[in-house]
Each structure stands twice: as structure tokens, then as C-alpha cells.
Image 1 (cartoon, helix red, strand yellow):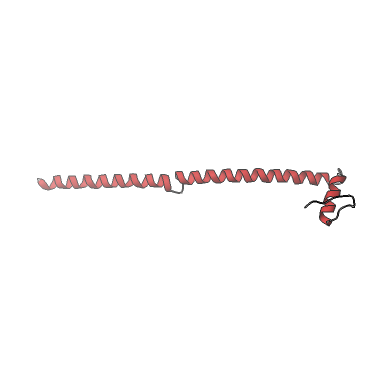
Image 2: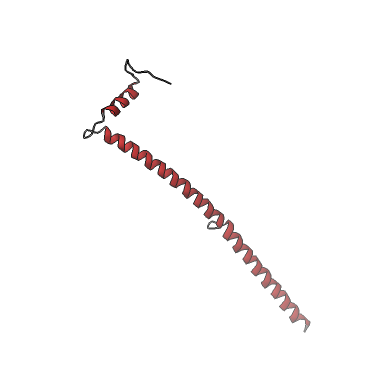
Length: 100
């Protein structure tokens, strides 16, 4: 009669160890895994960085679109054309002062 009780206690201990092991595994996976909390924080930080970069690029595109429109055949801004030509050619007028 002593043997069945020893087996029941041993089986309970194995069951307890397996349950604790699974609990630890799932806890670790939920924090450190590919879809865990740390990965989520990293993805959110990357998202914020990419949104800032997107906004900066959108502003740059808007500025370049404005310059392109101002230099087009339909709408020619002579001051901008003069500025761009002198910048590309590296020339200044005789009455201008250049500060560097």
C-alpha cells in the first residue's frame, strides 16, 4: 500500500514542475519573444522615428514642388530664376556684396 502513495506524490510533483515550467516559458515569451512587450516598445519607437522622417520628407517635397512650380513655363518667378542661375554659375552682380 505504500507504493501507490509514493507514485501519486511523484506524479503530483512532476505535474507541478511541468505547470511551473510552462508558466515560466510563457511569461518569458510574452516579455522577450518576437511579439513580446520589449519588441512592441521597440516597434513603437521605430514608428515614431519613421513618422518624423516622413513629415520632414513631406515638407521637403512641398518646398521642392513650390520651387518647381515657380520655375515652370506657366508661372515664372524671375527673382527665383535669377537666384538659382547665380547660385549654379557662381556669379554675382557688380553691385552685390557677398558675405561668407
